[in-house]
Length: 380
Image (cartoon, rainbow, N blue to C red; front, side, top):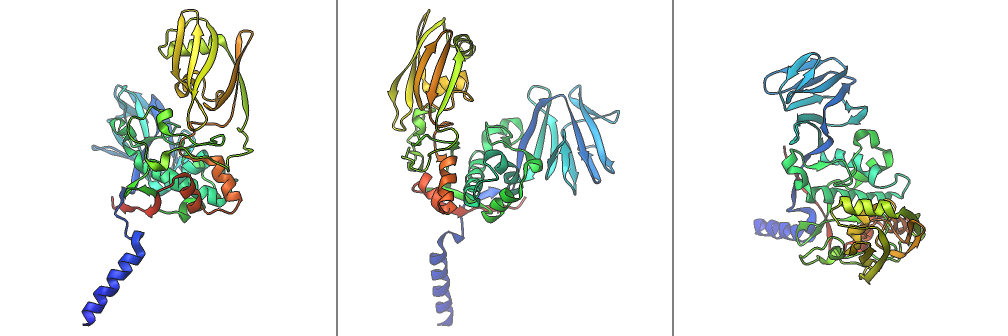
C-alpha cells in the first residue's frame, strides 16, 4: 500500500512539474569560427598555455607567439607544426588582442589558409554574443529575452558551418560574437539567470529569428526569403504596438544611380543606366513586396528584400520603404524600421521591458504558440 502511494505521488509530481524534465538535449561545447581564411595570427596568454597536435606539444610559460601559415602547416618559434593544433590554458587565451574563454583550435580551411576556432561552453559563448546583439544599457528583462533567443538560435543553427569544421561564425551570418572581450556584467547576468532556457515549438527548439526594429509590424519569412515551406505560427507577422519612437523609426538615405547599378551588375543582374525605381505590392507586414527598376536595357523586377541586401542594407535599412525619388544622378529613399522584420523586434522588446513586462511575456508576444524549456546539456 505504501509503495502504491509513493508511485501515485511521483506520478503527480511528474505531471504537475511538466517541463521540469525536458526531452530536448543539446551540446554543452560549441565551436565558433573567429578568424577565417587568414595566413597568420598572434596567440597570447598571461599564464602557462599549451599548443599541441597529435605528434607533439609546445608548452609556454606566458606571453605571445606568432602563428604563420607554412605550406599547409604552421610555423611557430621557427619550428613547423602539422595541423590541426589546439591551444589550451587554465586562463583566458588571447587571439589578435581579443580575449576568449575555452580553447582555441587552428586548422586548415577549404581555401588552404587558416581557420581560427574558439571551442567554448555555450553559456560562455552567449556572454560574448549579448553585448554585440543588444545594448547593455537596456533593461535586464530585454537582455534576458535576448539571451533566450540567442541560445535558441545557435542551438537551432549549429549545422550552418559544419563543412568548415566549426558550428557557427562570429559575424551577422550567424550571430556577432566578441568573445570575453565583449562581455559586460549586466549581459552576463542575463545569461546566468536564463541558464539553458530555449524557445520551443512542437517539442523542438524554435527558429528564433530577430531584427532591430520592425516599424510597427513584423513579417512572414515567405515575403523575405521566399520560404516555400509552411510558416510556423510563431513566425507569422504580427502588429507590433511597442515598436515606436526608436532611432530607426524614420530613415532617409541617398544613393548614386551608378552605385546602385554597379551593385546590381555585380550580383548578376544585367542592368543599364537606371531611369526609375518603383515598388509593386505590399506584404502583410506593410513592407514593399517587389521592386521595379526601369533602365536603359529594359526592366528588372526583384524581391524588395533582395534589392535591399544587394544594394546596401546599412543604408536602405528596411523593406518598409515609403518612397523613392530620383534627384539628379541619385535616388532618395525614405522608410521605417531596420532589418528583415521577421520574428522578435529588439526595440519593441526593449520598450516592453520598460513597461514592466517579463522576458517570458515578451517572448510569448513575439513568438506566439511557443513555450520556454530548459535543455539538457550533453556531457562532453
